[in-house]
Length: 126
Image: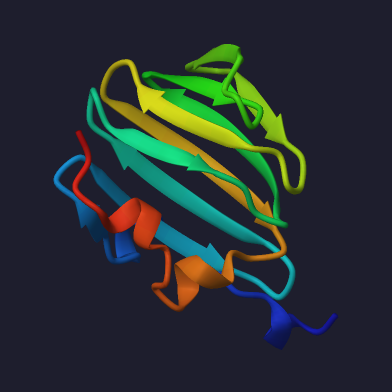
């Protein structure tokens, strides 16, 4: 890898994308990875969904309650300093228990996030 392939980013320089009154995000994408800062206000709900992308969710501030599985029968709270690994095609839903900043890492990058076809996130949150 040559030095021209290396890129440097500052979160403060990345534009904030508003998805709903309760949900915002910032994205940085490489060839095979995507990292996102996701800002959720208390009560924000990310509806149940699945994707082929493997996901790591690191909670920096706040807490999310995850409902896992197609029937949402497994509940896992993830708090600041904790990481949840979500394998490819695993059903999941999330609810912000308090104002939350989470950092999500995806492999490969989420094409629906890049091309703005992620309507499940763009509908008004409860």
